[in-house]
Length: 535
Image (cartoon, rainbow, N blue to C red; front, side, top):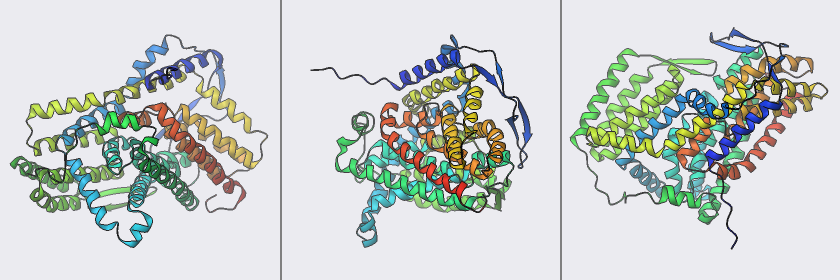
């Protein structure tokens, strides 16, 4: 019998990409744009390139840096690495209480009660669940650029997907891919659309009418694609690309019979409820009003006092049921405060990791665990997720090699020259291809906007394309390939937590990427051929 060829480990794939990047630095001429710091409309400063300032420099071929880039990659991605480790530890503490198992069982039990309603039966209750969850995360991606935050939700939605008869790929799609579609649609995302429009000199968040249309189209196609795959897996579980991986990593884990388990509420849970209530009351007194920013507009409301009041009311109701429901209540309010923190106080991975860390500690104490037991649980969780954290640093080495080799600017300059003789449709298509290609190398939306928009925006004036169309080409090019590029620390982190091998993810996502990229180009054509609002 012919021996089955072994598929390279994700670490091996990333390492060979680093080697390939280093080889390119020997053959691609070095080059740089001059850079300057400008102040955007919202007062933030951004380093951008100076138009027509490209000049060739001496080559910086990378050799030893193939190995030293690991260290630099870990330093560069330290925030995401620590974020993943803290998330893993915190959720491991929570999972020890079996609260998430109870929550999933209760949720699915309630859906069974309504699946006989004619409308739900016609649409399919599970289709509705997938659609609503994906729409919610897509809104998060479109409004405040949810990306890194999705790593934390993988631990919730993969078990949910498996409990519904699907696989881990469906669980990843529910939150990560959905947020990615919203990120590509980018209705009010300040980190991509906000910066790109600011650098292009056009009013912030204009053209939202057509972007809203594209957001609907992208999400409709995405949801239909995921539901079709989910139905296929449910009908034949072995058709899943990750069937064996899920059996090994998820289905073999100890599960409880939530219907017959013992429900209890230790005194420690009431103590945690009291402490959290007091802390929230103090925060409510300090932050009576919170200004929530949505795109270019904002509203000031007493959101923290309101959430505090709701927590104080719901707490005893959950505690009377069991500590499991109280811990789920803590999880729900953790998510709510995450949204408030991001939209109202500019939180990023440090603050979010801290929030989930506190959630984990509160869950452990509420479940009457000793300090030593909580510590051991945290370490077990961090150990379980360590491979996901390490691969993020390894993937970060790819960008380090390209930057140190001074070839990123050369690549950008060379491809931008290819638009000189194209018509409007051809030019917007080339812009789109450029942004898509660069996103594979530089997955950071804000960094790519600062790198490309000072070149693309003035060039669009010369060829008769609106700057708004150029921004949309950036928007699509920045969004789709985040779901497949190995240089994305978020993607690698998500796959690590979900325990999905990168090569299998590529096999699943590649056809979807082809559809999305073609659809993106088709949606760009009206921006140069039609008189659209804001364009």
